[in-house]
Length: 347
Image (tube, rainbow, N blue to C red; front, side, top):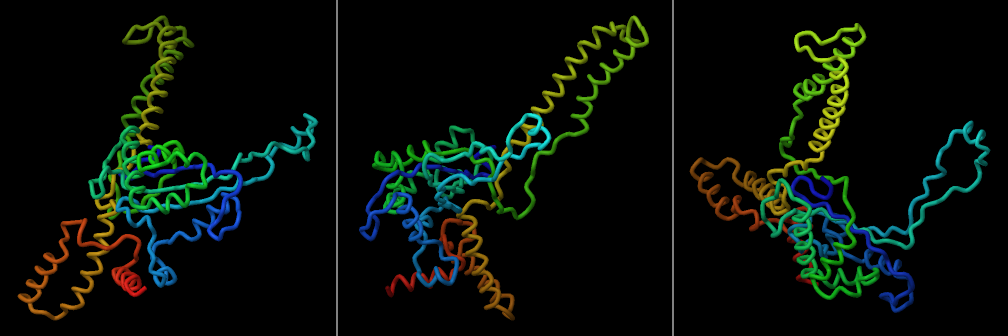
């Protein structure tokens, strides 16, 4: 299903960038497109490399426990893929000059692409849904957009103030409406949180084959009866002519229905992974690291000591509570989170 799969919403927004110039961060005049590029270049990324860890300033999108990943891209224009290939002989017969220019697709202005993968839930930490109709998807998108605005309004303003129509955005609700107007359909989602293979619906191929073959077989028998001049089909006594005519119509209808069934089955969203929501992913990373330390620290302990220590581990780290304690978003380890906290504290 477009936009929705594995309990996630895959959102794509295309927003036209304003024409003309604006005053940049340095006080100089520049195009709105260049202003967007500079703003995005200064936007902090997640603490995922030695350079970003040293800076200690995390991405503003880590304030959302619903956003798995996102990306901004400035699309200046379409890519020219070369001339449309044609057959040289056909072009020669039609007397078409192969060096005559062909129409080239162009954008009417630069666009800002915003692609996001979020948990398709109304509130952070809710279980991932197996299905969502378009209206439910819209409500989830709007709730996420309002929450995002409330948590990173300054950053969003600095980006989108260079885009067409953003002047009317005044609060979280109007920002959600603005993104809705800019949304385009996402047809190629990507998700990879599987621990075990997903349980996918399996087509009943033998049954479908039998349903498809039955009317075709009857139609062929009717045509054979006509060829051999039989007045009626054996056993059933039907007229070969009428049976062949009805059989052709039935075969076409059945094959079309089966095609629709197969396509509809292929468009069903994949089921959500058992621990595919962002809070569960962060909790898994948190427990993985703490349990590794626990295993190292308690090598060689006797059974009673190990049992008591593991009880303390469960009490302190609460494996059943995915919301807390947990790993902070946007960091690759607990040590990085602690290091970034120290950096901010001493700055």
